[in-house]
Image (tube, rainbow, N blue to C red; front, side, top):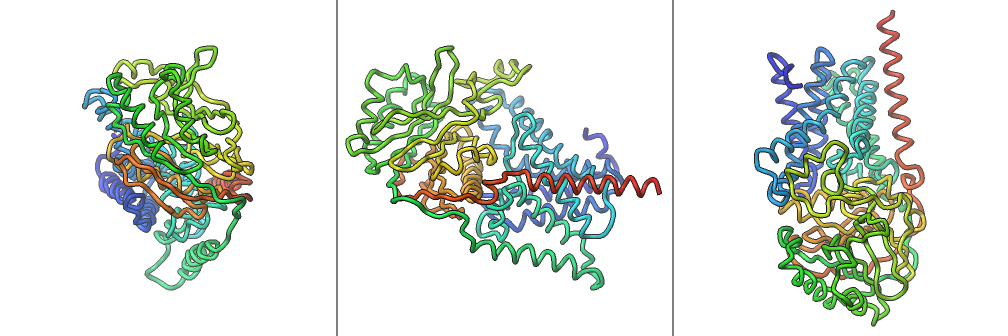
Length: 500
C-alpha cells in the first residue's frame, strides 16, 4: 500500500499527513475549528496538483493517517493497559486500524483526481460530494467508525453549527469540504474568476449565521430536576472481584447524595449480571429515589432466557421497571466479528460476548418526560437515534470511557454529544464513569459539566422539547442523494470528455 511513496510522491504525502495532523486541533478539547478548513483545504490543494489517481490516493492516505494517528491513538490504552495486549502488538493494531480508516479519504482523493473537470465551483462541489460519501461510508461499513468525521469539529461557535439541525454531521462535513476546496482552488492571484467562489464562501457563512437564530424545537412540560452521577471507578479496579463491594458502596453513596427527581448512573456502573447482585441491593438503590417519587436509571448487564447477555440500562424507583438494551455494539470490545477469535487470545476484555438489543426500543417514561436512551458508543450514529423521535423529549447517554484513560476520548465524545443535541433539537444528558458528565442544550451549548476523573453528582433542571428538526425528519438521505448525483454527473462528464 505504501510502495508508491517513492520519489516525487513523498513530499505530497508528508504535506497531506501534516494537514491531517493539524486538523486534529480543530476538534475538542482544542476547538480551533478553523484549522479543519485549513487541513481539508490543504488536501484539496494537493489533489488539484496530483498527476494521476494513484497520487491522489497517496495524498488522501497521508491526510487520513495524520488525523487518525493523531486523533484516535487513545485506543492503544484500551488494548495495552486494560486489555493486556503486548505493547508491540497493540501499537501495530492501532497503526493497522488507522491505515484502514485512512482508506476512505484515500479513495475520495483518487476518485477526485480521476473525475475532476470544469471550473472551480464544480470541482469544489465534486470534492465535497466525494468527501461526504467517504465519511458516511466510514460510518456504516463493518458497523462503522465515524469518530472524527469533520462535521463534529463544527460545534458552536462555528458558523456551520447552525447547519447541523438541517443536514446532520455528514452534510456539515460536506459543506466544510466545499468551502475549503473553493478557498484552496480559487484564483486568488487574479481578480477575474475570483468573485464567484468568494461570494459562495461568504454566502455559506452568512446563511449559517442566519440559521443560528432559528429554533426548530420548543420546550414542553415542567422543568425536571436531574442528578447525573460520575462514579470515577478506575477501569482496572472496576472488574476486580476484590473491589466489587467498594463499587457497590460508591454507587449507593453517590445516589444518596443526590436530591433530584431523576437520577442517572453510568454505563455498567454495576459491573455484573443483574441476577448476581446482592439480594435487595437494587431495591435499596430504588428506595433512595422512590421515597421522593423519583426514578433512577443505571447501567448493568442482563441475560435473557436463552442465555444471551445485554449491555442494559434499567430504571428503578417510582413506577414500573423499564429497560433499554444497547443495540450498536463495539467490535472487538463487546462482540467478536467473524474470523477474529484470535484477537481475544491476545487481549483480556470482560463481557466481550454481548448481544445487540432490538433495533427500535421505546423511550423510558420519567415523570412526564419521555427519555430516549443510548449507551456510550451509540451516540456516534446520529441516524440511528432518530427512531425515538418525535416521541422522546430528552436524550440520555450513559458511558464508560475509563477504558481510554486520560486522553482525547472524553472531550471528543462530549463534542459528539453536542452534535447529537443540535441534530435532534433535544437536550442531551450524559452520565459517565470518568467524564465527561454534562447537560447539553438543544443549541449545542454545554450548560454544566463535571471535571473529569473526579467522583461527583451534577444536579440541574432541564426541560423536555418537542418538534422536529429537518435532519430529524429526513436523516442523511437528502445529502447522500445530492452527493451521489454530483459524483454520477462528474463520471458521465468525464466519460463524455474521454470519448470526444
